[in-house]
Image (tube, rainbow, N blue to C red; front, side):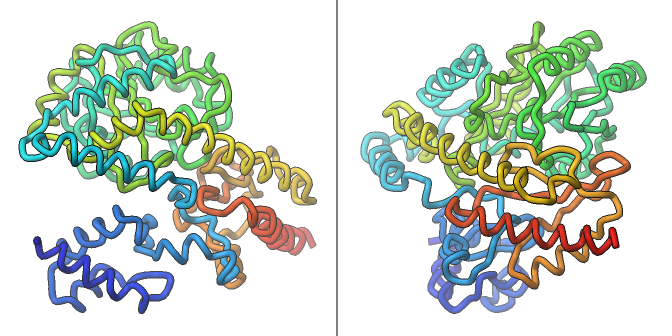
Length: 442
């Protein structure tokens, strides 16, 4: 047993003694007399076992308390992006893990294939086809989460010899940090409810040698907007004209109930890299994503992938393949889409029926990551302090300049709040905001 596994067991035994939030990694390292790396690995193991969950830049929290916040403490969590644990079919997936151990035990004693477990690639190909993503198996890769795919794409050279990347503003925070880590020159382009400014997009591609454009067309992170099919097609056409690649991060594709297609499906040329994640529809600890590469990038991506980690963990790949092929994923997604659709409809209707809607330029996007557009004079820091005092958690990474000059977004996460407490939580939050607005108006 590795040291981090022993520490993980020790921390697990002490979980009942911790409050809602665990001590920091530094504090745990001092408490157990080990390095921060050992603590980090131990916490990842506990997170994979769904005993704790992480919140970006906030630390680690107990799952059992997170699931019962409304019933035990009256706490409403608009900050946690983790999927609802009670909507995951643990028993079915556990059965797939046991089946994988029984039927593929010999494979687990050898290194797998760096491209991914071949049967899972075949299963992923069928899932992709259902979303209008048609790709040859040799162009489909299984990665250890979308973050690994993004890391490889940042490092590897592209045929267009681009020396600059284009990113939406705002965008996925960890990708911004990744670009900074690799010293990439990143040029922002404003993302709004109408997408990006296409003239500005064309101008930037004219003026710079852009390697790729990183975009989240559907359920944008963090604002929640989704592009129209026509907008996606124009983006793809402009990028192809300038020989610029597009990385499409479609992390919530499985939860879409509209007729919106991936940008990949709108492209007429082989310039789009498509990323699909299972984190939000299953659980973050699974760390399995799918990357679809253009033919002229596949070989280089394969080389970088192989040298990065040899292969992605085989056991969860086999378990996921069984979960997909046995029809369990399809049934799970049907239930999840219905649940989240009901939740998002309810949230939007509560906002529409509340007096505050008169002060909003538009209703919040129907997305698990969403926002309320507030007047630009609104003091988010004071609001967050008041909400915390009244047991409402809001995301720490608020972005005051993310909208237009007249409005600022209050970022919200709807993933974790149970449906039966969503109305109470939302009403309470809106009442606090309205009080602030009326106070400023007076």
